[in-house]
Image 1 (cartoon, rainbow, N blue to C red):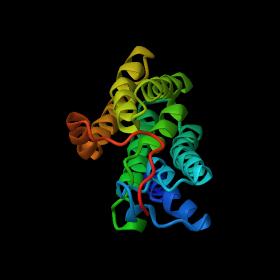
Image 2 (image 1 turned 180 degrees about the horizontal axis):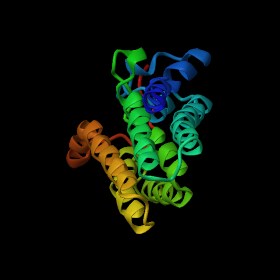
Image 3 (image 1 turned 90 degrees about the vertical axis):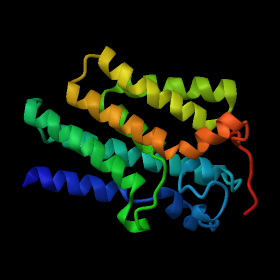
Image 4 (image 1 turned 30 degrees about the vertical axis):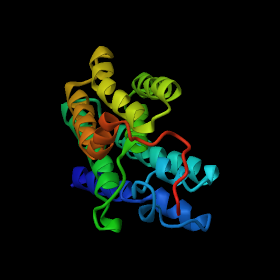
Length: 202
């Protein structure tokens, strides 16, 4: 019963869209109505309101971190506990990508995944963040940085010797991130992908 409660709570927490909430708070258009149409920090940044984008990023990351952190505090580090944490990882991430509050049309999950990784293991999260930052600084393309960090995360998890269930969960998140970025990948290959900070007509 406790397992179901944790998983459902994690999914519902993940379903909270900070992009939509912050846009309403700052009087901005719905992030689903402009740019990429994605309710995430990068698209909110295209509105020109950096504070809203930063708060979106922090909120989406925090909900991923909180769900996993709480699960880890209330479960033992035995096989069942490790499996529960892995399930919570996927539940909060899927909540963001397929949120019940937004008719299952959510964000791409980059910030939420980062929060999840930081909760699982601080070095895992920092490694993924460093990968994102390096790629973002060099190429100034958010999607490319996200894809690089997603590809690296399961590798870092294995290198750190984390439980195989957590490695698998991070791998599933990475695959879903690639799937959610399929349009971005097409734009990257065509040389049409938007760069960080570019504004869209709203």
